[in-house]
Image 1: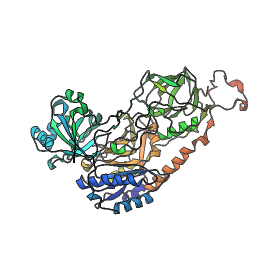
Image 2 (image 1 turned 90 degrees about the horizontal axis):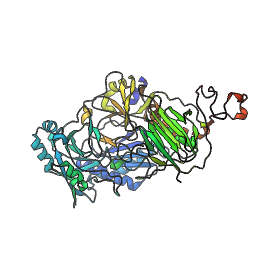
Image 3 (image 1 turned 180 degrees about the vertical axis):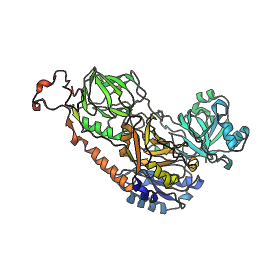
Image 4 (image 1 turned 90 degrees about the vertical axis):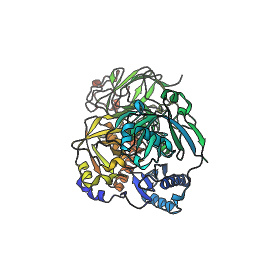
Length: 255
Length: 342
């Protein structure tokens, strides 16, 4: 078993300082990253690069997706290999400045009511303290500005929203909260997430929305899209939100 | 009348699975589908049909059911206890399921087993597949009194088995996005640590308990959420490794120390809780070669099929066998007193 030390020091996917980078994911995937930390331009670059991958539709590519600042590509090992695909990715990367890409079209602003604190956000006080704010100031900060859907991921239709002010660069907790419900608003590392399913999590649970982000029975099963913006506002009656269409959220087109 | 199974009872770990839904990763929906892809290939070979036919996945669960019509079944994955109207059936083989007969399946040591139906299970297609994605709330687990339609079957052979294929307990890993964060000392310790399969495990992931310290990194709590693939070994904040499975999340912020080769996941899935595993890194190119070789082997499984019972004309001492009931003398099938094809 010790014979693999050389493998570990020769990793092809080492953390690098220059971006964009191409790294392998598992045995049949590539990740093209445009930054090492959350970054607005890198986020747009990732969305645009993924759209370009879809347009190219290289043979053997099984699936593409984006995360916050990266585009992911999974391929069929029977149909292509790492060297050929890496070369194609390098060529595509060099073909333009991806950081100049505009945001996707058809974006919307969603106004979303949230019940903060109490039973519906039991870690609000803890999160506010980590951010150096009172509970009241924390709610005011989180509702002051729209946050953008930087990516959809983890669970179906689930948005990663950001970016929050620097004092909200708070770590995830070391243990997992065994369960937070669908629609929960959680926070860590200058981001908010609204959970699309009930789930265990390492993020801190600060509030509850009535949103149903994934509706498998619907024509369009996913409520939010990358690039959409979300402006939260405090509410106090969760049952009413849950009964309302789209959890009481209303959308308008962004121009 | 439509061919169908009627479920008499089912524990929570029973669900309909096929090859899942590719293409929704960008919307946060992982592919899902059968956790044990080797089991899907084995069931397909035993019944002479494509591996895309939906089957009943028994994730440590138990089920009792009967069929509306005469059907053919195959039993694959983790060894489980199966009886047809009370008579034991050989696991890892194909059998007849006569109309109205009661099939009972329950766990032996634990792990994921699969019940395949000739013609496949054909519930309504949702978002391009028949499988339930339990973590996403897409479909649901099978429940008592469910009636599940079964597709048409043009085949007729039963009483086939595949050769024994004992699986070892070494999980081979390729490096992942955050492997480096852990440092060579920790990675070396990972390869020299025994891990016990925990009772906690489901279609999302399987917890492994290290014999000794966990593998936490301070840096790991603040890394950017990044793409996850099945097989990733995620280290949560308390240092516990989870091997992520077919219903894993699509992105996640806990670091992954490596990725288990997809062809090694059946080892983990078929083992019972308490089984000891080791992890070993292999270079990416070796991982690719192993994966390709296993894909080739899976595709040619039907060449390895063997009859479960020998042809009576070739058996010299027919009187040893109770041919009417199909119950054997008990020593011709690996000394297991189980019933073969009806």
